[in-house]
Length: 231
Ligand code: ATP
Image 1: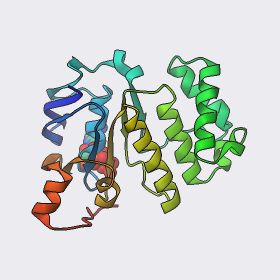
Image 2: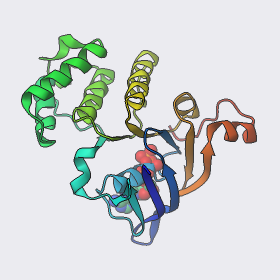
Image 3: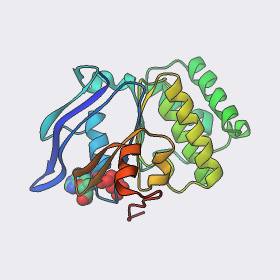
Image 4: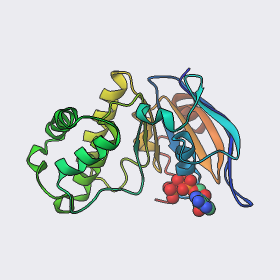
């Protein structure tokens, strides 16, 4: 069943930020939302996370409406990075992991796995503000996956990263998918999603203007590298 959005609409006053989105993302799939600034991607994610209530429509995960009770099933990398600059990496992750109800030992074990994997184990006791933007992004990613969520929502995970970090993060995401995680992410750039996703949705001014398999879309548009303007 996976993640199902049915006629999901979000209005802020008279402004429609998300306009009648219907789609189904089966479990263990990797799905990409493409669109320029203001297309409605973040608003859609906030509704999936249960942080915003849709004005119309319904969102379900494996047949159940998503509420705050499902927060342990979902991981979220927000677009606006929310780390405390003065905390050390370990303190930061313990703090965020505790909010998820994890024990310190589990958090530290998971953190060390990811820091090793991202080749930054030496930063465990460094303050977040001393890390480069790319490394801060990796810490934010670790925070999103510490509790091993079933559904992982990544808002612009590759934005502002250098190619080496983009590749490292892509490999991590592929691995999680292969281990059973359902992954939904947004990007401005087709090249970031075409390697990873079988299916995408291109949004424009809140509307899903194109939706389907990448192979079919490429065949229809005949383009290899579509860039959606706005980055
Ligand atoms: P970006 O890449 O810039 O984050 P996006 O595709 O994620 O773009 P959203 O952040 O979902 O787009 O914004 C969609 C539209 O909804 C924008 O025009 C934005 O200004 C508007 N919007 C978002 N949140 C609110 C809010 N709380 N109140 C009013 N308007 C909002």
